[in-house]
Length: 139
Image (cartoon, rainbow, N blue to C red; front, side):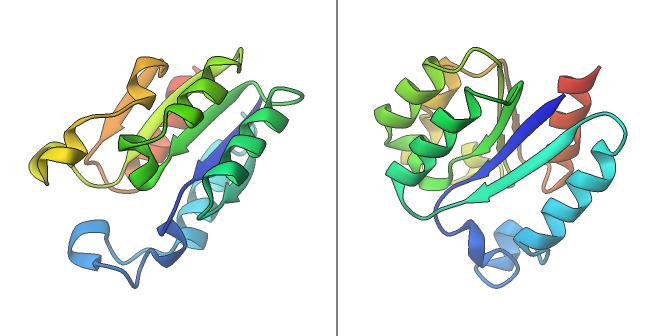
């Protein structure tokens, strides 16, 4: 199995940006943890961008060789119909992950466009949510 682990805007600042919300792990820490957790069950391809179009292009590429996408689209979760449309064109499984509990935060964060396509949503479990997503996809 091949899984695209896709991260949206500002997630490259994990460990530095609002650690009281997002924790102290860096994006590289999380990617390494996910790769280790998936070892022997799935190959993990990681990609992060602060640009909506680049995230869409990554989803389009995933159509050619990935079985699933684990996506934390960051703020694009709440705004991007274009990312939803790209995911709707992807035939594999999709799991939406958020480090923080978005329902305990600002009202605008309660709406997810991605949720309409996701096979599962994991919210508020910190980096463990990514491991749970791998477990779901590889069971």
